[in-house]
Length: 221
Length: 221
DNA sequence: GATACCAGTTTGGTATCCCAAAATGGTATC
DNA sequence: GATACCATTTTGGGATACCAAACTGGTATC
Image 1 (cartoon, rainbow over the protein chains, first blue to last red):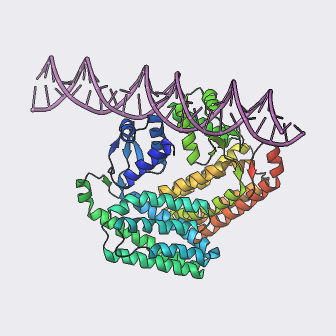
Image 2 (cartoon, each protein chain N blue to C red; image 1 turned 90 degrees about the vertical axis):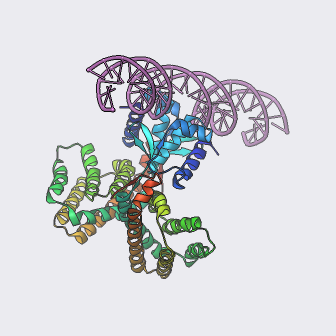
Image 3 (cartoon, rainbow over the protein chains, first blue to last red; image 1 turned 60 degrees about the horizontal axis):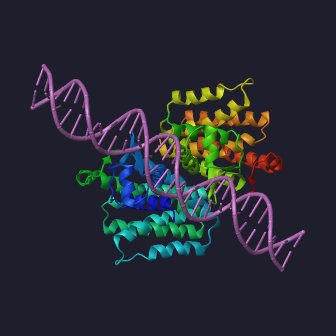
């Protein structure tokens, strides 16, 4: 694997895994030293991550994008548009077997599953469902949106009940998609996204002080 | 303006203006010499244009993305999702004065207006309408989709009647938005996008031989 | 004539060097 | 003690040197 892809992947992981906090300053030279690469691949990685919204320019320098509550609300609206369109498409041509694969993903999580895994599967559910639409643009839109949401979802204080409810909603959406009931799948998915957004924004707004204390920049809505 | 932004802008214009044909190979050294910049800004520009879908990797090298009819159809579906969502949002809060600005754009085109200007305004209509939604993600999605469509629309063989019909549809959409009639605006916009796609794909498919003769790579649906 | 092979060239990936602008930190002045 | 000012360092933007892999064109072999 090339250095460029390597730096990009590792840096993305550090940002998404909150090893580098939202709002932190980045210097090309620090990244260079941290990953043992020269500035050329470092700069390529930063340019890529910038388009993903994970880092941004701060005057002349680079900054890890802060968690932005207003942005999270806008992303939810965007997600609703693209995910609903995707699932409607899926309903017109999906085979039961492909739905089974996604359902199996959900099944793979149980009481012994680490929180990190639930987090990942919860995102992949939406991404893989969008992939089934067969539309590359809808798929990428959902994938990129979930990437942007990833850190915020990680910070969310989620109780067992909320996770269980999310999983139940996921299953209901799959059930509707399996029947090819586009309207029902769209309605359920839409409600799921809006509900998720509400819980997420509420949780982060409430915990904003705590997050800032941990050094994470959280911009209000 | 920095060299990086300069190279990026000029190279984008050359690609969108078909001065470099779809499917053509690009070498970093050629670009370097063509714009009098070194490879550092050239690479930054290529990385950016890659995320816009205007250039792509071809093995180790770079290629100007070909016109892809299947992709055009997928983009139309994507546009329908995001543009309809945007216009629905707009209908809930748009002021008549902001609609006026867009209507004035349409009015600025008359019989004496060069074809190039009609082309630009036809895209900007959709972009500015999406901007009115106030949702940055929907806006960027529309803007990026129009960028990807730009070259294909430029190649389309459009008659006067088709242009007039498009402008009439644009005005009808604005009228519905001005009244805040979200359902009607959504219906009209949706039909407009699908109609545009059909005309575009039909035109390009018919003229595919001619386009290839001009050295433009056109990938079938 | 087709094909396998090899030297020379081109090209993207990487490392490194230079520079101007911005940030930093210490000092003199009030 | 606060502030204005200057020397130093740091940093991103750009240019260039180097390399390994890929490509090219020609040649030898069958």
